[in-house]
Image (cartoon, rainbow, N blue to C red; front, side):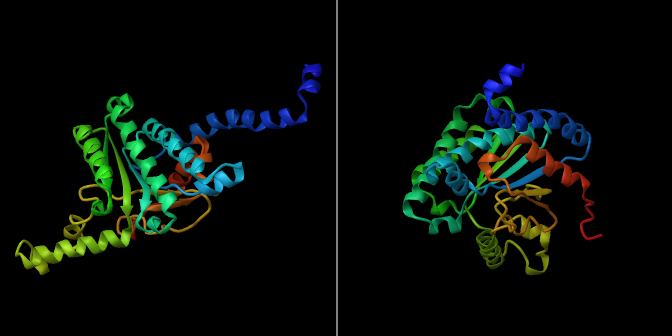
Length: 268
């Protein structure tokens, strides 16, 4: 053993130590969260793809690709905890202000992911319904076609729900909802005096979907950036320094542990 350690070298030993510690830590953390209350709905703001790529010496687009692959891991972690709804902030209305090359790449990445879901047997096995929220009129015909296809394919799945926010903004959602309300009032479908929070929620993109219990944002930024502004009124917020592509299962479990330690009173 001594000879092996000497030949391996201190660098390799240092690399193995964190991995060993994580393996020891995982069962401890799991024992702390497995029996506690779980969020029914998690909102997810995936941030830090470009910074991850920069740190790793990769092209920015490679960081986005790594982030896309991480989503599959995250969904499996949620299924293990029987967390029924995940809403992913995939592409915001503000993201259109990025360079045309990056916007095109992100849209192509989303298209590829939607097509992968169409042939992924796990989506059917786990009963995952996929729903896209946002301003669909801003999407390309190709994107709209793929969105409608995956929604139709998974329409009867009733175990889990994955909402993907594309061309989404919380303010835009509220503005669009107000326009619909105004049109219905003008058309006599609804009376002004009957409008309350419950009625208004029926005009949101998330109609019929319960509000998120927990919203997680990666990369150290501590803001919602327009994500689910109406729905997040009583959501627990969890921010982590970890870049999204580097987000691990133990990072997720830590978020769950923090959620379980908070007392949710909903203003009472």
